[in-house]
Image 1 (cartoon, rainbow, N blue to C red):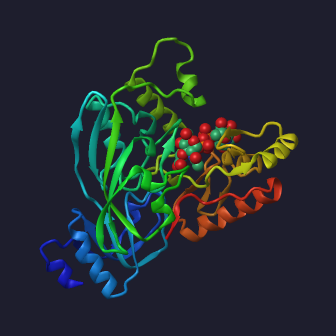
Image 2: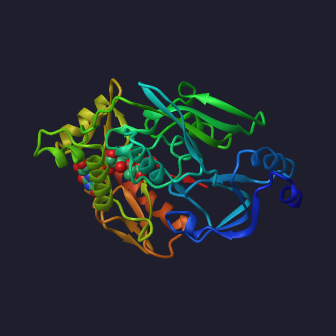
Image 3: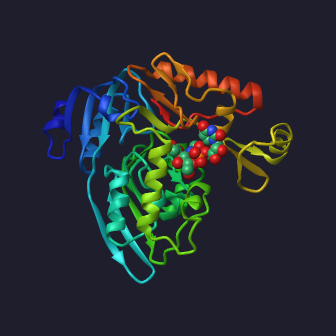
Length: 346
Ligand code: EPU
């Protein structure tokens, strides 16, 4: 790998890098060969060498949606590509291109400073801009897909850069073409299209509650602050308690199954979904099974939100996955519903 280090476009290599601070669970992790990717041009040469040497590899953004083992063998690409720029602006839209390594929340804050509102409901979500489209991050009635124009990525199958328009990204709830094809694309740049006509998105109950006392239309800043406050109350700060946000997806079940469950459990919390389907609140199911606040050795279920699993200290991937399995087993036994793990297991 030394030749990659000496080549003009070579990324910085650190052997045996500790990644405790680059995964929000705070697991002790050692990356055998950690490459800091600061420009897209560094990728083709590096990927060629990785392919020649048949090394295992993966890309790490902010590490906020991953479950990492103690050792990451082969190459770990730390996605640090910077930069954000308004590339076009007319009466209808602004186009912004952003490096995949930019911190998501800092980007959201910057758009609001630039008087380009739209992303405020997605404030304070941990992670990077490049990771956001992969799981189509969403919160409080908005999804990143709503604002994406196109994505630039390195295709490791064809060994060429591609620009995928939004339609090719096949976004769905916590899903995308990139998530469906793991290990194929390395996202390098995201182009956002922010409409100039702005309307507050207040339909989500937690947000609606904050503004129910007044008829006045809230400002962007007020919504941004409300979202930050709600998230801080409900979700643990990874700097204080290790976690990866929602640990399970909200399961989507056929109407028939939902109807049967509702008869048995009239308090069941759910949301409308595509025709014939219903999205259940996984947090409610887990809470009802008595897991909220539970501790299992060094890991546990967060006391304020049953959908969040936490690392209280020196937990490991095995500890978290063991706890996850007991939750999945119990929820399946009681409700007949399979919970899918949301973070990527490396
Ligand atoms: N609930 C409980 N007990 C709990 C947690 C939740 O009964 O311990 C019930 C409550 O009735 C609540 C409902 O479940 O009204 C839904 O909970 P909440 O509003 O907190 O949202 P969520 O469905 O748990 C989803 C996203 C979050 C996102 C929020 C707000 C998923 C998997 N999670 O959580 O995303 O912030 O909505 O939009 O879709 C993430 O993906 O990491 C994440 C935090």
